[in-house]
Length: 305
Image (cartoon, rainbow, N blue to C red; front, side, top):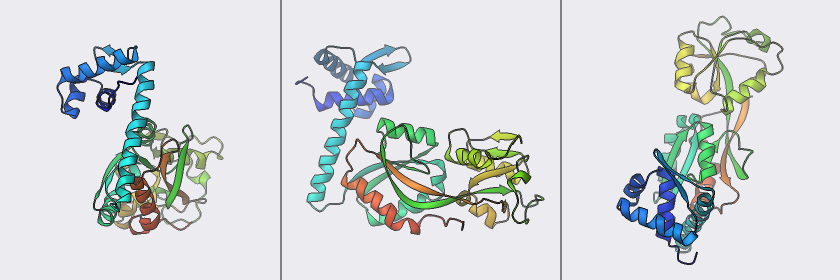
Protein backbone atom coordinates (compact mmCIF):
# COMPACT_ATOMS: atom_id res chain seq x y z
CA UNK A 1 0.00 0.00 0.00
CA UNK A 2 3.06 2.27 -0.25
CA UNK A 3 1.97 3.83 -3.53
CA UNK A 4 -1.44 5.11 -2.37
CA UNK A 5 -1.80 8.88 -2.69
CA UNK A 6 -3.86 11.40 -0.75
CA UNK A 7 -5.64 12.30 -4.00
CA UNK A 8 -6.77 8.70 -4.48
CA UNK A 9 -8.10 8.53 -0.92
CA UNK A 10 -9.98 11.80 -1.32
CA UNK A 11 -11.54 10.45 -4.52
CA UNK A 12 -12.61 7.35 -2.60
CA UNK A 13 -14.24 9.48 0.10
CA UNK A 14 -16.04 11.58 -2.50
CA UNK A 15 -17.40 8.50 -4.26
CA UNK A 16 -18.74 7.16 -0.98
CA UNK A 17 -20.32 10.49 -0.07
CA UNK A 18 -22.00 11.12 -3.43
CA UNK A 19 -22.60 7.57 -4.65
CA UNK A 20 -21.56 8.19 -8.25
CA UNK A 21 -18.32 8.87 -10.10
CA UNK A 22 -19.82 11.82 -11.98
CA UNK A 23 -21.01 13.56 -8.77
CA UNK A 24 -17.70 12.88 -7.01
CA UNK A 25 -15.83 14.35 -9.96
CA UNK A 26 -17.87 17.58 -9.78
CA UNK A 27 -17.00 18.06 -6.11
CA UNK A 28 -13.34 17.29 -6.69
CA UNK A 29 -13.28 19.49 -9.82
CA UNK A 30 -11.88 16.63 -11.85
CA UNK A 31 -13.13 14.74 -14.88
CA UNK A 32 -15.10 11.53 -14.36
CA UNK A 33 -12.42 9.47 -16.20
CA UNK A 34 -9.75 10.90 -13.86
CA UNK A 35 -11.70 9.81 -10.77
CA UNK A 36 -12.37 6.40 -12.33
CA UNK A 37 -8.65 6.00 -12.99
CA UNK A 38 -7.78 6.90 -9.39
CA UNK A 39 -10.25 4.31 -8.10
CA UNK A 40 -8.85 1.62 -10.44
CA UNK A 41 -5.28 2.43 -9.38
CA UNK A 42 -6.26 2.22 -5.72
CA UNK A 43 -8.06 -1.10 -6.22
CA UNK A 44 -5.03 -2.45 -8.10
CA UNK A 45 -2.74 -1.40 -5.25
CA UNK A 46 -5.09 -2.92 -2.64
CA UNK A 47 -5.63 -6.08 -4.67
CA UNK A 48 -9.37 -6.12 -3.92
CA UNK A 49 -12.53 -4.48 -5.22
CA UNK A 50 -13.45 -1.47 -3.10
CA UNK A 51 -16.88 -0.60 -4.55
CA UNK A 52 -19.79 -2.56 -5.95
CA UNK A 53 -20.92 -0.89 -9.17
CA UNK A 54 -24.73 -0.85 -9.20
CA UNK A 55 -27.14 0.74 -11.69
CA UNK A 56 -28.33 3.23 -9.06
CA UNK A 57 -24.97 4.00 -7.49
CA UNK A 58 -21.73 2.73 -6.04
CA UNK A 59 -21.52 1.10 -2.63
CA UNK A 60 -18.36 0.22 -0.70
CA UNK A 61 -17.47 -3.43 -0.21
CA UNK A 62 -16.28 -4.67 3.17
CA UNK A 63 -12.72 -4.05 2.01
CA UNK A 64 -13.76 -0.63 0.75
CA UNK A 65 -15.15 0.29 4.14
CA UNK A 66 -11.83 -0.60 5.74
CA UNK A 67 -9.93 1.64 3.32
CA UNK A 68 -12.51 4.43 3.77
CA UNK A 69 -12.08 4.26 7.54
CA UNK A 70 -8.32 4.67 7.13
CA UNK A 71 -8.89 7.53 4.66
CA UNK A 72 -11.08 9.36 7.17
CA UNK A 73 -8.45 8.87 9.87
CA UNK A 74 -5.81 10.38 7.59
CA UNK A 75 -8.07 13.34 6.69
CA UNK A 76 -8.77 13.94 10.38
CA UNK A 77 -5.08 13.80 11.23
CA UNK A 78 -4.15 16.21 8.45
CA UNK A 79 -6.86 18.63 9.58
CA UNK A 80 -5.60 18.35 13.15
CA UNK A 81 -2.06 19.05 11.95
CA UNK A 82 -3.25 22.14 10.06
CA UNK A 83 -5.10 23.42 13.14
CA UNK A 84 -2.12 22.70 15.39
CA UNK A 85 0.25 24.59 13.08
CA UNK A 86 -2.14 27.53 13.00
CA UNK A 87 -2.33 27.40 16.80
CA UNK A 88 1.49 27.57 16.99
CA UNK A 89 1.30 30.68 14.81
CA UNK A 90 -1.32 32.19 17.09
CA UNK A 91 -3.94 31.97 14.36
CA UNK A 92 -7.50 31.10 15.34
CA UNK A 93 -8.51 30.02 11.89
CA UNK A 94 -10.15 26.96 10.40
CA UNK A 95 -13.43 25.23 9.70
CA UNK A 96 -15.88 23.21 11.77
CA UNK A 97 -19.03 21.33 10.81
CA UNK A 98 -21.62 21.05 13.57
CA UNK A 99 -24.70 18.84 13.41
CA UNK A 100 -27.71 19.75 15.53
CA UNK A 101 -31.15 18.38 16.34
CA UNK A 102 -34.11 20.31 14.98
CA UNK A 103 -34.97 22.27 18.14
CA UNK A 104 -31.58 23.98 17.96
CA UNK A 105 -32.99 26.05 15.07
CA UNK A 106 -34.71 28.30 17.62
CA UNK A 107 -31.38 29.69 18.83
CA UNK A 108 -29.13 28.77 15.88
CA UNK A 109 -28.85 32.25 14.36
CA UNK A 110 -28.03 33.89 17.70
CA UNK A 111 -25.41 31.18 18.38
CA UNK A 112 -23.83 31.50 14.94
CA UNK A 113 -23.70 35.30 15.16
CA UNK A 114 -22.08 35.21 18.61
CA UNK A 115 -19.49 32.68 17.44
CA UNK A 116 -18.73 34.63 14.25
CA UNK A 117 -18.18 37.82 16.26
CA UNK A 118 -15.67 36.11 18.53
CA UNK A 119 -13.99 33.94 15.87
CA UNK A 120 -14.35 35.72 12.52
CA UNK A 121 -11.72 33.49 10.88
CA UNK A 122 -13.41 30.20 11.75
CA UNK A 123 -15.97 28.97 9.23
CA UNK A 124 -18.87 27.35 11.10
CA UNK A 125 -21.19 25.14 9.04
CA UNK A 126 -24.35 24.13 10.91
CA UNK A 127 -26.43 21.17 9.71
CA UNK A 128 -29.84 20.96 11.43
CA UNK A 129 -31.79 17.71 11.12
CA UNK A 130 -33.63 15.07 13.12
CA UNK A 131 -31.77 13.34 15.95
CA UNK A 132 -31.42 10.06 14.02
CA UNK A 133 -29.75 11.75 11.04
CA UNK A 134 -27.57 13.92 13.28
CA UNK A 135 -26.20 10.90 15.16
CA UNK A 136 -25.69 9.05 11.87
CA UNK A 137 -23.57 11.96 10.60
CA UNK A 138 -21.49 11.77 13.79
CA UNK A 139 -20.98 8.04 13.20
CA UNK A 140 -19.89 8.66 9.61
CA UNK A 141 -17.61 11.52 10.72
CA UNK A 142 -19.26 14.01 8.36
CA UNK A 143 -19.72 16.39 11.31
CA UNK A 144 -17.20 17.32 14.00
CA UNK A 145 -19.58 17.99 16.90
CA UNK A 146 -23.26 17.21 17.47
CA UNK A 147 -25.57 19.40 19.56
CA UNK A 148 -28.16 17.12 21.16
CA UNK A 149 -30.39 16.82 24.19
CA UNK A 150 -29.22 13.27 24.92
CA UNK A 151 -25.81 11.74 24.05
CA UNK A 152 -25.92 8.54 21.95
CA UNK A 153 -25.18 5.25 23.69
CA UNK A 154 -24.13 3.12 20.74
CA UNK A 155 -20.86 4.95 20.03
CA UNK A 156 -18.18 6.18 22.40
CA UNK A 157 -18.43 9.96 22.78
CA UNK A 158 -17.26 12.80 24.97
CA UNK A 159 -20.17 14.99 26.02
CA UNK A 160 -19.93 18.53 27.39
CA UNK A 161 -22.97 20.23 28.92
CA UNK A 162 -23.50 23.78 27.66
CA UNK A 163 -26.98 24.69 28.85
CA UNK A 164 -30.48 23.66 29.86
CA UNK A 165 -33.95 23.55 28.35
CA UNK A 166 -37.39 22.58 29.63
CA UNK A 167 -40.14 20.30 28.33
CA UNK A 168 -43.78 21.30 28.78
CA UNK A 169 -47.32 20.46 27.68
CA UNK A 170 -48.95 23.12 25.53
CA UNK A 171 -52.60 23.61 24.61
CA UNK A 172 -54.72 26.04 22.60
CA UNK A 173 -55.48 29.10 24.79
CA UNK A 174 -59.19 28.28 25.18
CA UNK A 175 -58.65 24.66 26.32
CA UNK A 176 -60.59 23.81 29.54
CA UNK A 177 -57.36 22.92 31.39
CA UNK A 178 -55.70 26.28 30.73
CA UNK A 179 -55.42 28.30 33.93
CA UNK A 180 -55.88 25.33 36.27
CA UNK A 181 -53.14 24.57 38.77
CA UNK A 182 -51.47 21.25 39.63
CA UNK A 183 -53.15 19.27 36.85
CA UNK A 184 -52.65 15.55 37.42
CA UNK A 185 -51.19 13.37 34.68
CA UNK A 186 -54.34 11.27 34.90
CA UNK A 187 -56.32 14.32 33.74
CA UNK A 188 -54.38 14.64 30.49
CA UNK A 189 -53.70 11.01 29.68
CA UNK A 190 -56.83 10.61 27.55
CA UNK A 191 -56.22 13.83 25.62
CA UNK A 192 -55.24 13.71 21.96
CA UNK A 193 -51.49 14.31 21.88
CA UNK A 194 -49.53 15.40 18.84
CA UNK A 195 -45.97 14.17 19.26
CA UNK A 196 -42.57 14.11 17.56
CA UNK A 197 -41.49 11.01 15.65
CA UNK A 198 -40.14 7.88 17.31
CA UNK A 199 -36.50 8.28 18.29
CA UNK A 200 -36.59 12.00 19.00
CA UNK A 201 -35.48 13.03 22.49
CA UNK A 202 -38.77 14.88 23.04
CA UNK A 203 -40.80 11.78 22.14
CA UNK A 204 -38.74 9.58 24.46
CA UNK A 205 -39.19 12.06 27.33
CA UNK A 206 -42.96 12.15 26.68
CA UNK A 207 -43.22 8.35 26.78
CA UNK A 208 -41.20 8.19 30.00
CA UNK A 209 -43.33 10.91 31.57
CA UNK A 210 -46.53 9.00 30.80
CA UNK A 211 -45.12 5.53 31.54
CA UNK A 212 -46.39 5.34 35.14
CA UNK A 213 -50.02 5.89 34.12
CA UNK A 214 -51.83 2.57 33.55
CA UNK A 215 -53.91 2.25 30.39
CA UNK A 216 -52.64 5.49 28.90
CA UNK A 217 -54.62 5.07 25.72
CA UNK A 218 -55.34 8.58 24.49
CA UNK A 219 -55.06 9.10 20.72
CA UNK A 220 -51.66 10.07 19.37
CA UNK A 221 -50.69 11.72 16.09
CA UNK A 222 -47.07 11.80 14.93
CA UNK A 223 -45.61 14.82 13.16
CA UNK A 224 -41.92 15.31 12.38
CA UNK A 225 -41.76 19.11 12.39
CA UNK A 226 -42.23 21.19 15.53
CA UNK A 227 -43.81 23.96 13.46
CA UNK A 228 -46.47 21.55 12.17
CA UNK A 229 -47.20 20.37 15.71
CA UNK A 230 -47.62 23.94 16.95
CA UNK A 231 -49.99 24.79 14.11
CA UNK A 232 -52.07 21.67 14.84
CA UNK A 233 -52.41 22.60 18.52
CA UNK A 234 -53.34 26.18 17.65
CA UNK A 235 -56.31 24.94 15.60
CA UNK A 236 -57.46 22.81 18.55
CA UNK A 237 -56.34 19.43 17.18
CA UNK A 238 -54.85 18.38 20.51
CA UNK A 239 -52.13 18.93 23.11
CA UNK A 240 -48.39 18.71 22.54
CA UNK A 241 -45.29 17.89 24.58
CA UNK A 242 -42.53 20.21 23.39
CA UNK A 243 -39.43 22.13 24.39
CA UNK A 244 -40.46 25.38 26.07
CA UNK A 245 -38.08 27.49 24.00
CA UNK A 246 -39.68 26.20 20.77
CA UNK A 247 -43.08 27.62 21.78
CA UNK A 248 -41.92 30.78 23.57
CA UNK A 249 -43.09 33.17 20.85
CA UNK A 250 -46.52 31.55 20.53
CA UNK A 251 -47.05 31.57 24.31
CA UNK A 252 -46.00 35.22 24.50
CA UNK A 253 -48.45 36.17 21.74
CA UNK A 254 -51.31 34.17 23.29
CA UNK A 255 -51.55 31.61 20.49
CA UNK A 256 -50.57 28.74 22.83
CA UNK A 257 -50.70 28.18 26.59
CA UNK A 258 -48.48 26.06 28.86
CA UNK A 259 -50.44 23.75 31.15
CA UNK A 260 -49.52 23.54 34.84
CA UNK A 261 -49.11 19.76 34.97
CA UNK A 262 -47.69 18.09 38.09
CA UNK A 263 -44.13 16.94 37.36
CA UNK A 264 -43.57 19.56 34.66
CA UNK A 265 -41.59 21.27 33.38
CA UNK A 266 -38.96 18.58 32.91
CA UNK A 267 -35.52 20.11 32.85
CA UNK A 268 -33.07 18.68 30.32
CA UNK A 269 -29.53 19.58 29.34
CA UNK A 270 -27.89 20.48 26.05
CA UNK A 271 -24.78 18.49 25.15
CA UNK A 272 -21.96 19.14 22.68
CA UNK A 273 -20.92 15.65 21.63
CA UNK A 274 -17.82 14.46 19.75
CA UNK A 275 -16.29 11.04 19.10
CA UNK A 276 -13.70 9.79 21.59
CA UNK A 277 -11.77 8.06 18.79
CA UNK A 278 -11.07 11.43 17.21
CA UNK A 279 -8.65 14.00 18.60
CA UNK A 280 -10.13 17.38 19.50
CA UNK A 281 -8.74 19.97 17.11
CA UNK A 282 -8.03 23.50 18.38
CA UNK A 283 -11.06 24.71 16.39
CA UNK A 284 -13.33 22.08 17.96
CA UNK A 285 -12.00 23.00 21.40
CA UNK A 286 -12.59 26.70 20.71
CA UNK A 287 -16.20 26.02 19.68
CA UNK A 288 -16.91 23.79 22.67
CA UNK A 289 -15.42 26.29 25.11
CA UNK A 290 -17.42 29.06 23.41
CA UNK A 291 -20.66 27.12 24.00
CA UNK A 292 -19.91 26.67 27.69
CA UNK A 293 -18.73 30.23 28.22
CA UNK A 294 -21.30 32.19 26.23
CA UNK A 295 -24.40 29.99 26.03
CA UNK A 296 -26.23 32.36 28.36
CA UNK A 297 -26.12 34.99 25.64
CA UNK A 298 -28.00 32.96 23.04
CA UNK A 299 -29.83 30.11 24.78
CA UNK A 300 -33.49 30.79 25.57
CA UNK A 301 -34.23 30.86 29.30
CA UNK A 302 -35.29 27.49 30.71
CA UNK A 303 -38.51 27.58 32.71
CA UNK A 304 -38.01 27.27 36.47
CA UNK A 305 -38.43 23.72 37.76
